[in-house]
Amino acid sequence: MELLLQAFSWLLTPESWTQQGGALQRLFEHLGVTIGVVALSAGIALPLGVMIGHTRRWTTAVALLAGAARAIPTLGLLTLLGLALGIGLGAPVLALLVLAAPPLLAGAYAGVQAVDRAAVDGARSVGMSEAQIIRSVELPLALPVIVGGIRSATLQVVATATLAAYTSDTGLGRYIFSGLKSRDYPELIAGSLLVIALALLLDGSFALLMKRHASAPRSDLKTTTTSPGRNPS
Amino acid sequence: MIEFDRVTKRYADGSPAVADVSFTVPSHKTVVLVGSSGSGKTTLLRMVNRMVDPTSGRVLIDDVDVTTMDPVRLRRSIGYVLQSGGLLPHRTVVENIAIVPRLNGATRPDARERALTMLDTVGLDRDLASRFPAQLSGGQQQRVGVARALASDPNILLMDEPFGAVDPIVRRSLQHELRELQRTLGKTILFVTHDIDEALALADEIIIVAAHGVIAQRGTPTEILTRPANAFVAEFVGVDRPERRLRLADAAGVEVVTDASGRPIGTLER
Ligand SMILES: Nc1ncnc2c1ncn2[C@@H]1O[C@H](COP(=O)(O)OP(=O)(O)OP(=O)(O)O)[C@@H](O)[C@H]1O
Ligand SMILES: [Mg+2]
Image (cartoon, rainbow over all chains, first blue to last red; front, side):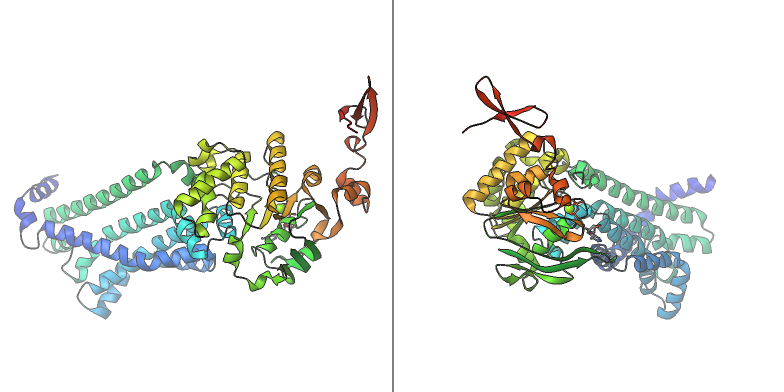
């Protein structure tokens, strides 16, 4: 309790935030690493996932691969990469990319794959090209699931980005590592609280975004992707 | 003219859905495929716009093998009403209908105007234009499917049980509409149905399809009704059903047509 109060008092001290390498700077670094890693990973994983969902090829292979990638311990990977790449942001960014890819990939291919086949068939049979089908049928209909994938990737990365401080002086993880080393527990707790707050903030933004989307006029259709009017035959 | 030349289709699991089928759909005529479930009607229909490519044999449109044509361009030039509707759930009714004119290069306002006109054609209220497919009844969705197929004024129409979920009164009026369309605009129509009465009402020529697309008989409605080639066709057409065995009776000086059990159907004009 004492420690928690000290942590809060640390958080309420302006200098903790404003000084060189203070909380504000670290918060933005942490956010920057998170957004950068998720964006970079999404740039690769989303197109790949959408293509796999669209063509329905290699879905089993990719599901297995994504499952295997999920099982890789990020700290272990980071240590290996750190040994290979040395001090700096390179190793943690790579490790975080590996962490972010599976949920992104899974969201993209599962979302696209779940789009009602009758709608895709209809789009193709009126003469939409494959690119048009992806762009104006599969992506809009798969969007909630894809965004769900981005959400879970973001949450994992924002929590794990504390490890960036393992090999570089970046982000909120610094407070945790240095607090551990110098037994400055209030600072350690304050750092953890900031990571938690950032994660909650990001999660809340996603929740808001998805709710907005769901209550848009087209909402009732996002969920009903059943084929219309199938007559008994 | 659409020509099926010894067409066979084998899906991945082996046994042929359609085996060695040949027939033609003459230009500006309506040919109706009738047959029981799983006999390969949809498969045959989808070979015309290359939604299915034959395992062997050829499908020709005006003597050109469709497999030499670009499938996307081909599909844009053919109207197709899907058995399952196939509307886009995230687009409104008017957007769904406007898709084909848009793909064919019409401007947005033109396509929209065209789509609204098509709503009138298929007897749907323009108030429905901004609804989504899930907010329509099954029959209304089917009519939107028909409107979409007609929207870019294609020469060829492929219609896969387009009126199955529509109530009998609207169905009759849509059948009438389709006949008018065919008569005035000279569309070439390949139509699939389970309903032999619908086939009799629409067809210039009926093709009765048995399992694997085997043609049990082809002929005009009159030929099919009066000279069924075999027991399968006779059974399918129901030539022995009481409502097909009409009789003439006299009701106080008016000639009344009744079915075999004496129920009145209509009056006779000479
Ligand atoms: N994509 C597919 N993959 C495998 N088999 C298929 C496929 N499509 C159809 N079939 C099979 O081919 C046969 C013919 O199917 P088709 O859909 O052409 O029949 P249909 O005459 O249209 O039937 P219905 O009247 O029920 O619509 C069926 O046995 C069906 O199971
Ligand atoms: Mg069918």
